[in-house]
Length: 192
Image (tube, rainbow, N blue to C red; front, side):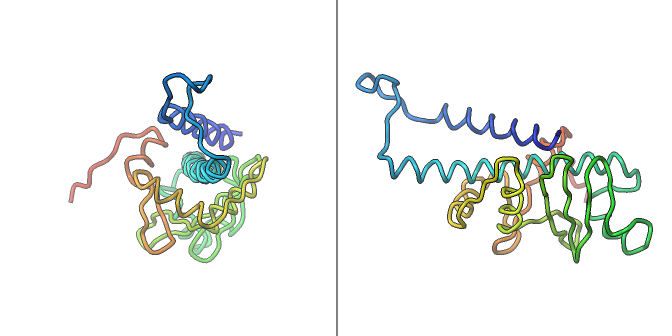
């Protein structure tokens, strides 16, 4: 349930920011909102829905990361699941922190108690990375499924350049500051 709650909080915050940034008219529109054509509204709504999906994924990933790390004391980062699996200390499939996990190749799929799937691969340094396919997998697993078009997802990640870093074409990670903020930790500086 905490994954869904985190995703909903992210969506509400994003909706509040979007509403505050919309231009207001000075009188002829009874609601005080400048209106676009229906086609522009639909396109804009789809782009916002894709951004909301990406933000919900980031929030869900942070919640899952925290829950799994708290339940496995030897886990410093999610990528350690690969090491523990390869060493035989844990099974390829199991449960940790209320999430089912399935280690695959160079990644892991976490499924929350609500059935929401969060799938990531790991870079050589253990950084969690994801692509459009994983974002769509997450969206389709939500209680009310969301499956944005590829172009809308591309626009969403480009608009969220303060939250995401494209580590290679089509693959993303959460930038340090927002990732730490999602986990409620202060940003750590690199001593070296």
